[in-house]
Image (cartoon, one colour):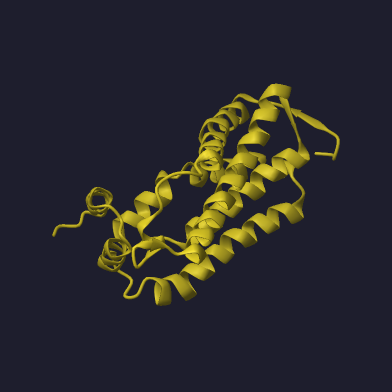
Length: 198
């Protein structure tokens, strides 16, 4: 596609954009407005909020909200216009690649990792975008998306498996989640997904 060329939305692209609109704009709006919820237990020290940890949490949460909102906003604009520009397609590719980079970096051990990775809509959406729409964006943008995915995998193999989750097994994540103060009900949900038996 040329810089100013418009691509009329195909049925497949409309489906992708509607998913992005509902999922990502929904998440983005919720997380942007979710500023007054109860403090996470892992941000508490000696019974009070640790301001440094709380600010790190807010920064991470709102950055996630920003990427989701941007992806959903691009989808909303394209659906309203009935067409997309090359730059909008490239923004979709880059946004999905950034989210996938994070997912690759934090693949959890065992069955839980597989379930989390393949139940996320960005995994399927990125595959569809690469298969059906990669020829419409500039090659360097495509290479950047591939690099971001590979970087996520590199971090996973060289850091996550060796240092972040050590030893690399479900019990490590489970114990650390409990120690951080994750609610028992959420840990039980993780246990079910992981096939963990106490």
